[in-house]
Image (tube, rainbow, N blue to C red; front, side, top):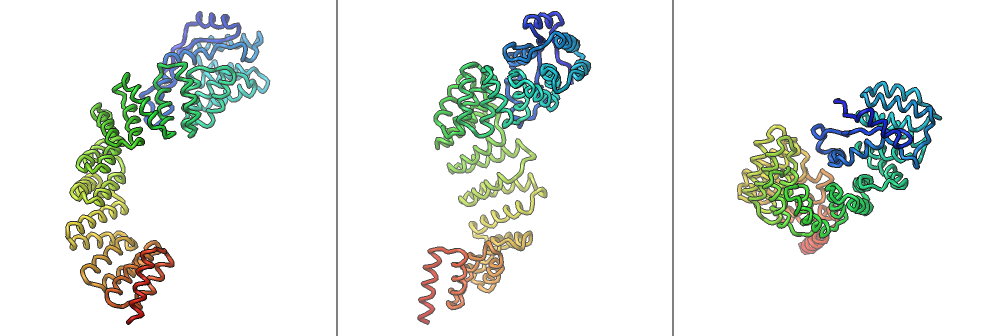
Length: 470
């Protein structure tokens, strides 16, 4: 890891004597954006790169006399040597010297300074251990609490960051970063009302920081206050029209307000900005399906697949099911063809079955009963215990006046607990069609025991009346 820049030794000594204790100003970078994982939300906060934040962290080397452990003359002499080594970027030697001061009764300042060195060099677990020792020795050590909280946030350990942050505030550390991180932590543990309050304070103290404004907008959204979220997003968009996150949050707020076409407009703007993601494109596709704009929906779903070649096909398979159920057969077939082309042998057996069932539905709708049977038989070959396919085959043979085969498949389906009730009803209907009322009645009674339904009860009563007359 590249060494971080430090201020000159002269400036460092000025800081020491100005504070009457110890200290050193350093420019600290707490992570490089090119090394951050996209899903690590805490590390993606822009506040870590804010010069104000970096200055505040550097100032944490300097003492705050009203909430600091008292440093003796001998301890200060040791700290002067430590800080001189830090200014020379001899971090290992500084840690060795601090290690000589370790012990239950040594000054918490030594543990705190060791923690800062670990923090600066991205050894976060080691830093946490040292900060915890420091606050255990001196519970009012605000700088230690604050830096401990920042590491917890960096590690996405929001639950344990909260008590550290509230300690900082209770000890008088009421700055924008502390309130903002407090809001961020509350949001991540699901306390959205507390998150809103914290973000409000952060915005009050630092109105120019976008992270805290976005945090408040998200807290509105999570509370179901879609109108408030929408209003705040529109205000922020005026000054930041190319920030895709704002448009996406506005789109979700419009969905919450049941304004899907407004949401679609927001998502289309994200596309024009060149910042669409698979998630935003899939959401756009879902909106277009619900609005019966099926061709546009397919375009969006396929664009999502193009963006993420390694994505799982479950989302687009679900979309194909919905399109087929809504009789958008051409669009469903187009999606299926693309799924086959893009995934092929990578499809699981369950996914292959789902596609075959959609093909069967399309075949039935197009009147291609031969194709339907072939598809259903392919499903049974993949999974002989697929009750849905067995029932569909039974229905096919019932429609084509082949009652023996229909009953054969219904009986197979009835052996599966999940499908027993429905299979017995369908089998009874075939028997009633053959005039075998007394044979059908036990099947209907069993179906009612398993899965009571009013329409089946009425049907059974009709069959009983006819059976008694014969």
